[in-house]
Every structure is written in C-alpha cells, then in structure tokens.
Length: 114
Image 1 (cartoon, rainbow, N blue to C red):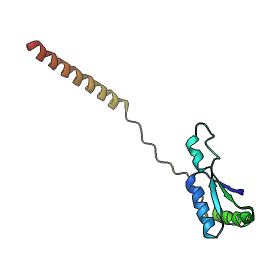
Image 2 (cartoon, rainbow, N blue to C red; image 1 turned 30 degrees about the vertical axis):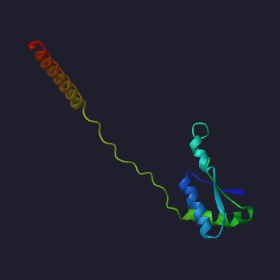
Image 3 (cartoon, helix red, strand yellow; image 1 turned 30 degrees about the horizontal axis):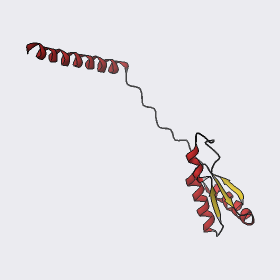
Image 4 (cartoon, one colour; image 1 turned 60 degrees about the vertical axis):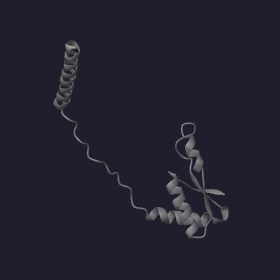
C-alpha cells in the first residue's frame, strides 16, 4: 500500500475513499483512530488515504482531477462587533452594588426588628 493523500480531517479522508470506490479503486483510511491521542501525538499528519500500488497511478489522476474541481477557499471573516462602552459596564457595576446594599440593608432591618 502507498500513501495517496494526506487528509486534513476524517471527513475529507472518507470522501476521497468513497470517490475511489466510485471508480472501482480500493482505498483505506490510516490513522483514523489516532485522533484520540492528540496531546500525546502531533496534531497534524495523522490521517492518510492509502491505495494498492497497482492502483496508485489511476488514483493519483483521480485526486488531481478532484483537487482541480474544488473551489478556491475564501477566508470568510465575521465583522467584529464593537465593544460595549465603558460607561455601560460602570453603570452595571454601580447598579449591582446598590442592589446588594439595598438587599442586605433590608435584611438587617428585619433581623433587628425581631
């Protein structure tokens, strides 16, 4: 068996294996269960698609066609929301302090009356 493709994730690896199966080429995913060892193992380069040596050239042509047909990946970034103004944070803090003081003040009043 030869390494045909170094996959970024399991989904991509299985997509390629299924693509190979559609063309009657046998492939398998190696390193599928190694993702559970991340932290002990390197985080990348664990998942590979393997094919038999006699199928390697046909599979490589198929992968080249598949890569060419993929759309260019575009980085989509979400707009950054502005941070809330400091005044809102300060007002929330002051309101929390006032509510806490009012609660404990009323609780002591009840205790002292009894």
